[in-house]
Image 1 (cartoon, helix red, strand yellow):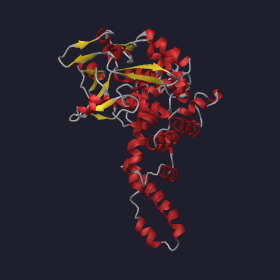
Image 2 (cartoon, one colour; image 1 turned 45 degrees about the horizontal axis):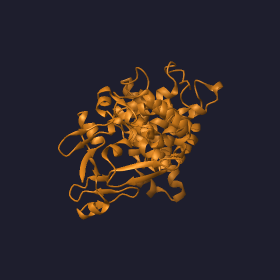
Image 3 (cartoon, rainbow, N blue to C red; image 1 turned 60 degrees about the vertical axis):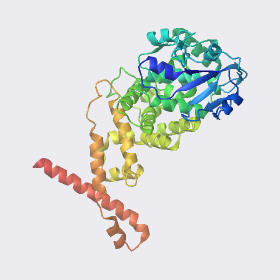
Image 4 (cartoon, rainbow, N blue to C red; image 1 turned 180 degrees about the horizontal axis):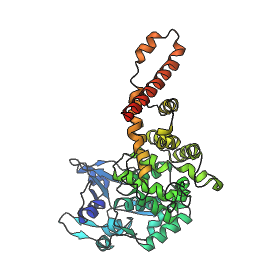
Amino acid sequence: MEIYTVGGAIRDGLLGLPVQDRDFVVVGATPEMMVEQGYLPVGKDFPVFLHPQTHDEYALARTERKSAPGYKGFIVHSAPDVTLVEDLGRRDFTVNAIAQSESGEYIDPYHGRVDLDKRVFRHVSAAFAEDPVRILRAARFMARFTDFSIAPETMDLMRRMVDAGEVDHLVAERVWQELARGLMEQRPARMFDTLRECGALARLMPEVDALFGVPQSAQYHPEIDTGVHTLMALDYAARAQFDLPVRFATLSHDLGKAATPPELWPDHPGHEERGVALVKQLCGRLRVPGECRDLAIITARYHGEIHRIKQLSPSALVDLFEALDAFRRPQRLDNILLACLADARGRPGYEAVAYAPSEYMRCMLHNAQRIDVAEIVAASSRSDDIGRRIREARIAALVQAGDEDKQEGAN
């Protein structure tokens, strides 16, 4: 029985990056032998075991043969006679097909170290085309390894896979899992550029793909379209280390512009309302988790009003706070404002421009919250009148705050 370290741990170690998880492949063993040595079996589709002390994953060497469309259509063969080279040959990219023995020797039959030096993702064999998840992994790796490129022959193969309908067999949960991981990488825009280049974006996220070629509003840079702006905003959100719901809301905030009739370009009136339906459609198809979905919907609907916040009357401002549920959920308002900030800075020359609506909106919310709700409730003789009186008190508080600001400015 021989044990080798494989996959991402080897790749990242050779690149000088921190190694998060270590995976091992075991050659010449049977499941019974692993159990006898105390390993805990956990694999459902093929033999994988947890080390009794470290809990690292140890998989028996295996080969795979395509049996049906999609990423689950495989027949797995695992036996003591499967060699290390055969096991490495089923992997996706050459840079992930490097093994290291317990003595420290590298086994690199597919020249992965050469491709590491070249900073290239290259498929190991034609078997790459048998698993459409590899297209998503390639795109995610591009978001993580920002100085890498995809080998031309690998990109050509990815295009042929898309044309053959392979990505259409991916289940929503797996697509979202890979997209969510890519959104949290250093340059998530590179993931969507890669998906678009091979044609997968139009099949998996047509709502996002449709943004490319749609002009921005006239007051912004006409030389970049809405798709480019969206990816610039997304990369800003990544640089600012915003969390996943904010990044997804940033990605989907302008979907309604693609549904704007061309005769209404470039101002896109009403794109916020149109965007809500498209965000719901996208989230429903990919089964996006509720926190991400809800923030994306409310950001799509109200980001325009937030950008124009200083133009709103006190009454309209209270309406907006209520629509955002800001009085009960101020943390969600913070996340909405972060997505709006990314939107505002996702344009050439705007990366460091101050975003006034954030501070103004927090200040106005604070003023509206200063009212004494308990006093209003105690003074109300009718329970159905409490809501109206609270709303009126909040509006009055904002009017007063505005008057005080004007007096300060005059002095």
